[in-house]
Length: 368
Figure 1 (cartoon, one colour):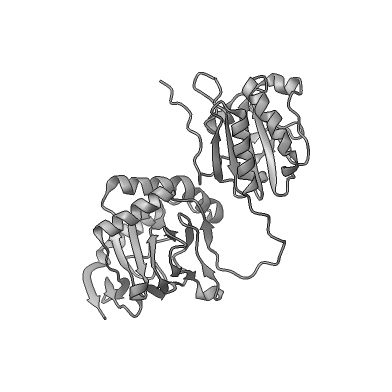
Figure 2: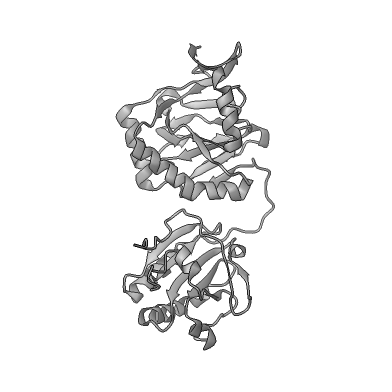
């Protein structure tokens, strides 16, 4: 039995494709980035529900200006094209001709039997899913949902000269609110242990505990379903962005770790790099995934080599950066800052990790 289509979920990268429009025989969808995008997979304009949705969306025409928002309808009906039942209206309104249905299938809008499962996506300027809106047989209600989502979009910022900044990637909507809460619940249930940092001592990479340098509680996740949920979210919502930004194909994740920086202990981590010891040299990118932004004060990341700017992400979002960058976690001054902190590496680094495992010591040196 064929698997039914699965619509994209919030935070996923929308697949890139090429399709014709009335004005371009081969429109590269990735060039639509840089503005919000409304994608409406309606199948055929002859369908009663599709016709009503398109008519009602016409009342929002002024929103689609190609600067802040653009609209793409996707038809799979050749007669929509031949009879010009759907027409581009530039700027802002275009229709893709998906006559073989492959793109509709890719987006979970086409059934295995060739039928249509209409769906609307609102994408952010990186072409990641902000909203997945099912039609549910209610055209008026559906368009009302679309209008509400469009009304919530932020106004574009002014054109400005960029300030120098660290070469980091900030990615929102990686973990869902439910997954963030499950991770914090796991930490609170099992508690954290004093967290150290790595130093090479006599040819061995040894854990050092020094509260003047670092104060944090850590808990490794030993619940396989919870680990799988984290990996699935990273694979679907973060790794495509890492590849796009850095041309790095991550294949492995080191440690499923929940950390807590507590204001009661002045939780912090002084300036360090993440790959300077024998047993950590394989690490390529660090992921600081924020689980409860807004519920504490302080705790931002800083990259001293690139100035005094502070970096954070919304709850469920991540800051990704090269492990060779000097960075520190500023002290938490109120509340508790919960984080998910894996490292990413690739297949070429796997052999290096295995070869250097002999240098990893079980010893812990306490300096406090």
